[in-house]
Length: 59
Image 1 (cartoon, rainbow, N blue to C red):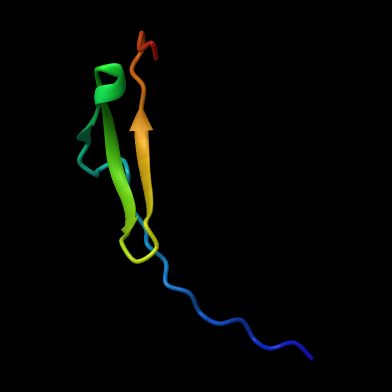
Image 2 (cartoon, rainbow, N blue to C red):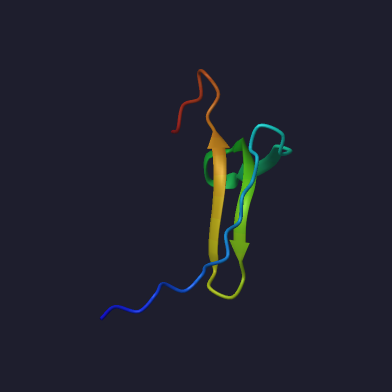
């Protein structure tokens, strides 16, 4: 017999209304835009939605 699954906690972010933030990348001298989605200090996991604007070149 199998056991019923345990419930999990979900985090939902509406990225169409979330505020974009600057994400400086000194190694390439660029500032990229991102929306933070999840930041878990306990595990060190972080998820972001990033955008690379037209014409951006990664040196």
